[in-house]
Image (cartoon, rainbow over all chains, first blue to last red; front, side, top):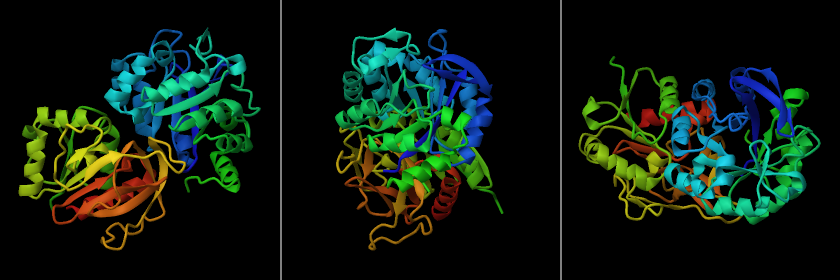
Length: 247
Length: 212
């Protein structure tokens, strides 16, 4: 399998933002321009998340999803405040290939079962957001902590038909000091669905480490925003480490 | 010369936007979305896109009247048909995803679940290179071997299926990535040409040319 490089575009309403620890969002540009730039650099997919949608009790803008889907010819996964079947239906109809479920999944895992059956597992990506110490799952941009451990949650999501898992750690977010490797290793060894590693990638080597830990895809945010590294640098590093990447 | 009109079947299960914009880039001519057999002009190639659940799609084909329509247009009136992703799977007879459901039965294959083995995770999500099939089948899609296309599926048609023109390997699974039946003018693609960058557009153009 080829390791996918997936830039994440975080937005707040219609602005692209960047944060740290799932918080402290600041505006950094236009999501459409950013999506087109990434697509021109041959990235494998895009992840677009409205980071304040859940807290503000709204859903990511359908209009924006429509514009994004029309501006690139690669798969896009969309998240942000998606809590019911109707919302998934509208987002997929707007042109997203898959949706990212966070809060909705951890609050009611049966919801994942229902929607993976309705829309197909391939359309349902769930995030496993570990809190400090990786003992508990968090939601609502790490504002709420749940009793379940990230590993148990990951296993349950797989049982309920989730198609992919985005594995993240709030402590690693935005620091660019490396990805949560132990967590990625644990989740990937205990599940058989694709794992997308998230949070913490600051250099191409961090992506290599995540792939070595079992991730099939790497989600990158800050690195592409704030360093000179490009998606090609990440792919070259993966190739040199013996992984297959899309040519 | 008359320009072809391509009819895209909308089962109202998923977005047809990206497939329509990909088709617009692939051919000169009109693209028409049809939501029921009554809207068809009765001529030109048909595209059947689809993602999601096999059972839900067959139920929808029945309720919208597309099952008889498609069988009739393809098998009797010899119109070209291209099935994409789930649309390809629907061309066969049945799927283990919904054992009680019946496929279109236009091509003779069954669909089964991908096996988790040899490092393969399921669903099979991502870019995988396609290769030429075994020598017993004619290689109709030359020039695409070794190139990457975007796949996103848990069920598949086996690479040994009659008419397989490109295969893709995922762990121990040999997937029929594309299938072409020149007599019936029917083709299928398991990957998403509309999500596979510029290369997907070229392949779509090539396949539409084969079933013209």
